[in-house]
Structure formats: structure tokens, C-alpha cells
Length: 221
Image (cartoon, rainbow, N blue to C red):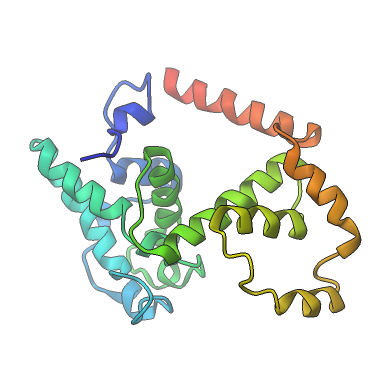
């Protein structure tokens, strides 16, 4: 399998972390408590044709199977890869319907977020172009926040277009957004300059420093 092992992501940690353990650490709830009732998939607005490749309940099952086969690493890796390369984790819009419907109180929307972060960290390659575009939008948004400390629509769209080469897609929306004040054409110069900046803005630098300190503290425990 081409994905990095959990130990590569959590260097310095005393034990190997499965996806289920990562989810519990981040959300306080465990996918292992899921008893496959299917209420999450039944209420999911994205679990439709041309949407997710599998329902949220199947994602939960993959995490359970990875945990169950820890004594067979190759089998566990297959379940891990299927979860991290699924379109489902990226098609999720975090509407929280699944979390609200879960009789076990599992934070399923939070689980999807953890899986997205883990997929990026381990270099999991999506198969669907739609998902690749979603990831490009995600990375463009994060980079925009790092550079300016806030969302800048022009810079966001500019970086997204450069990443995906979907140059002319959605161009008909630009005039409408400008008329409604959703995009400021006079900020284009500043936005263009922000794309050239390499590091985070000063007003958010301390946030990243604090996050890095917390990460190192967790690894040492």
C-alpha cells in the first residue's frame, strides 16, 4: 500500500494509532461504538447517486475492521486505505445530520474531518476528479487563511483556478457576486500580492506556533 503508516504520522508516540483511535482522540467518541443501524446513511444528503461512493455507515465499518485486524497488518492496511481514499470523506458537507441521528452519540461528521486530515497527511490519492477539485479548494482556503488571517475571495478563487486549471468554470458567477458585495474587484491587487507571500501572516503566526507546541506536547506524553 502506498499510504504512510500511522507511526509515520505520529512520530514519537508510544503506540501505533489506528484510525479509530485517531478519531476518538480528536472527537471524544469512538467508531467502535457503531452498531451499524444505518441511520447516518439514511439521513445523509450526499449519500445519493453521483454523490458518495459509500454511505457513512460503511466508513464506520471500515474503521472497525482496521481495528479488528491489527494482528494482520496487511489486511488492516487495506481497510485503512479504502477509508482514506473514499470519495465519501470529501463529499461530506459537515451538515451534522449524521451526528444528530446517531443513537450512540458518535461524532460522525467529526470522524469525516479526522479522516480528511489524515488522508492529506498520508498522501492518500483520490480517484475522482470532483474530489481532487474539492481538495484543491480546501488547500487554497487553508493557504489563504495562513497568508492573510482571513478569507480573501479573490485570492481563494485565484489559487483554486491555478491548482485545477478550471479557468473558465463559474466565470458567469463573478458579476453576480460583485453586484451582491460577495467579491471586491478593487481588492484584486492586494489578493494577487498575497498569493506571492510564502509564510503565514503575522497576526496568525502565533496560532501556528501554539498548535505546533501542542502537537509536540502530545507526542511526548
